[in-house]
Image (cartoon, rainbow, N blue to C red; front, side):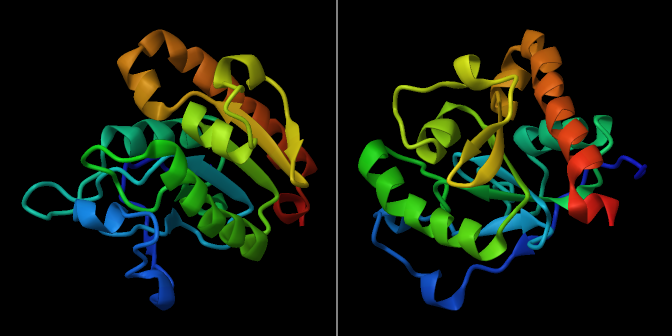
Length: 196
């Protein structure tokens, strides 16, 4: 098992042709694009709503609460940090009002291309926004889908609460960990890449 240490996972560079993408309008919010972080070739893809901040107000790198909670869960269930890759529905952090539904619809096509090129063995959707976008339905939520493995677009998918929700409501931590354990059980026992 890895030694646990909170750290800023390496960022995967945004593809050159998409760095200045302005189709969704979030470029006007002044935040930079974050394509993903962790191991770009990892068998487990973690899907969040948006990248949040990787830098503080002085532009110094820091590990936000969402990332701390996420890394703690990965460690506690015995998954190696090198086996995960984090990406987002929106590749830029929104900082002001925007048309949420239209923006997600535009941005999700980047995610689809990313998933198709990476072909992860497992996807874990964290939070309702990630779940609704990935499951192609505004009617679904974490509460009703968590606790089992789903197959969405051919990918084995687990659902869990958003790490920020877990930080705000610590009573969700056992459920969050339960869903990570479900993922770990399937990954550590059934995964060809883990058992090769």
